[in-house]
Image 1 (cartoon, rainbow, N blue to C red):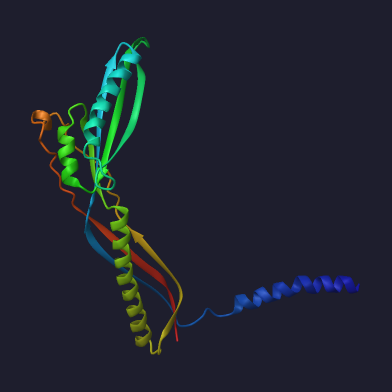
Image 2: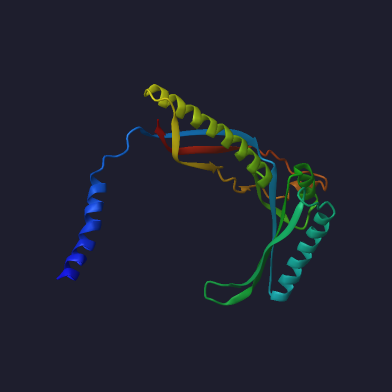
Length: 232
């Protein structure tokens, strides 16, 4: 019997405790606040994707033609390659069969890509104008990691300062002497800057020195601060 009473006490005890907590009124003097700050930053990173396609009756012949075009483009790109300023890497390289509507094999087709990326936009623009074995598929502009992190740090400081100022002002207006932060989150965001479709490079290749026209534009870096304060 004593063991049964002890078990009942163990079960009822936590239930009563939870009920007591549920009956407690929510804390007073708690306010939800938010602030944000943003800045426009000139994009400093340029990415150009060059591509070429080949087709023929033999897979090995198509592969050889693609490799020749890619090697020629790489040889030109490596002349000006410089880490951070002009980085060069190969992209997709694919070959597949080509069929008729009746499912008959008529030949092979393939494509190859070369990607040039960096912060030296004039050098990249001149380079892609000199490559004659491939055409421009896409051009994109974005913020480098270093510039994005620096911009986010500066904007975050502004957003946090605004949050603190708003918290102090709200507490004062409610007749409190000050406040303390209960919880807070800081979030940074930057609109994605995906690749922009561009015209084929055949027009630019009329002159071997024709540079690609460039206009990087700007990106909006934003930071928001959200949280609650306890007025005191």
